Image 1 (spheres, rainbow, N blue to C red):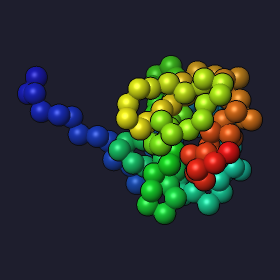
Image 2: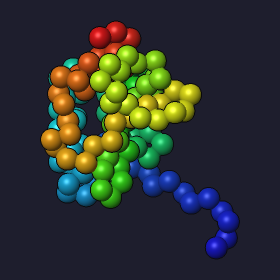
Image 3: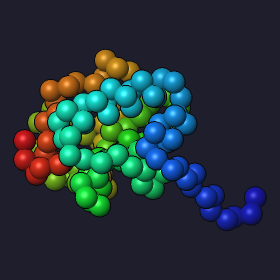
Image 4: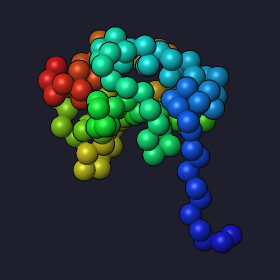
Length: 123
């Protein structure tokens, strides 16, 4: 082992990033992408720091991080969000996320509330 950091995989587009994910994760990503598109159609999809992301102009707002058996729907300003249902995890200065393992974990109403806050600063 050389001790050198590994280089993050680069993607040309959000679609390229999504197509590189497992079939199960692609299904989850598609559902979340549709929901975010409904709630915040002005956001642009991109890839930032190796994650599928949504930005408002150049400001990152939302991301999806993938693992083999789950994905995270994350909010760059998550620590500022009202979370009455206790969905958000994480203890960093800013970022919070929701761990999602199955389509059934996606609660459209509760997720929309968080997305609106993350994008607009209010629910």
